[in-house]
Length: 473
Ligand SMILES: Cc1cc2nc3c(=O)[nH]c(=O)nc-3n(C[C@H](O)[C@H](O)[C@H](O)COP(=O)(O)O)c2cc1C
Image 1 (cartoon, rainbow, N blue to C red):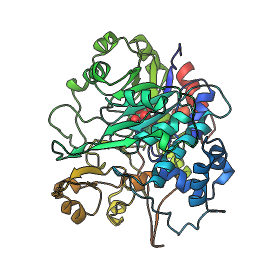
Image 2 (image 1 turned 60 degrees about the horizontal axis):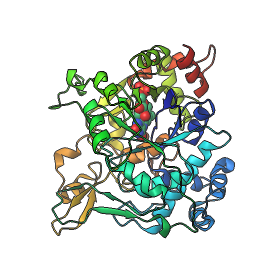
Image 3 (image 1 turned 90 degrees about the horizontal axis):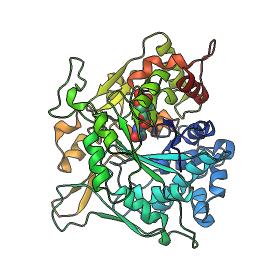
Image 4 (image 1 turned 90 degrees about the vertical axis):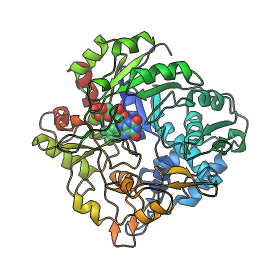
């Protein structure tokens, strides 16, 4: 490809940057990026909701190995949708030896999301993953590549070994990924393996090897990736601490301001001069959702900007309509606030939270939630006393976490992002008819500015409104 896009609509998980949003952006000639996080859960739940609009069925019909697509359909589709009070099926959790059923679901779900985002236009579409959610990477990437994804973007970790995996999967060759295991000892087997041909129903020609963009918060890390990654890195998204979602922690010892938010300083600013010297395209992210910021980025040598918050609240995003409207109203009244929570995420990365009544941003809603961990993407692998690998999440019941060598102090204030983020997109888990999971909305500091995208007299705006403002002011 000769030209990269100027605007990247950032990947926003779970399901906020759904196929619908990415397609809307791609149709306008900018890079639409679907979130690749937890797509297996998202597809299974959409099917259990009766597949409104028949979109999942349409995506499944394109899958190159029809019997696998049919198995997914048969297992999860509920005609007319399950009753609201009935829980969604519990999927097996990802582990070093995930069951075949889960691996298949992952391949198919990533395929469907990218396929739908690519429908009706010829422009590139990307997919975003968090490096920290390591176990589903191999089948997820393969599914997205089967659907012709053109860009893979990955942050929240150091994706040194992803470029080489893309090279192998493009040839349908087996690939491995090393799982980070707390307390691992030399000789432990921490490998996750995936062989596409064990799943492919027929021989296929080589796939396109997507461009790989690493999302980083420092030029040192960008340089290390360029030098040491096991394959080609095609560019960088440089994300600052005002961006929505997870943020890189500040350098050095964590210090909090009076409100309890991490303090970022001089050492956290990226040296753009050094970055330019790497000679690879880069995009700036974090508070870059305006024509002025785009101009500044281009003047600084960037290929463009990556924008999240402005797109998260547009009509095509996957965010629940009631949350979207409530936060838009707050923004219009100048009352929208975002808190950078240093402990909410079980990953222990700072996580930005928009304050919204009736969600887990509110202490009483957080305390009223039964502490359960039944989705498990953010679980950390650790070595047991017997030398095997087990998994724990700082958001799970404290006694369970402690019984897995976890520290009590690491559980304080942790929130179950898996369940909350699924609730944000209208798939809340129901618990015994007594409790339905509540959401927790993440947003960048630019939340206060989203009403700027509203056309005069309107109470909603579209992805096209965002792009027009970015390009034309
Ligand atoms: C709702 C939301 C969810 C996000 N989820 C992810 C994610 O899953 N992976 C990721 O790499 N970045 C995520 N981000 C960050 C965006 O991709 C993007 O880099 C960021 O939003 C840019 O800054 P801005 O919010 O100031 O526009 C998220 C941002 C938002 C607002």
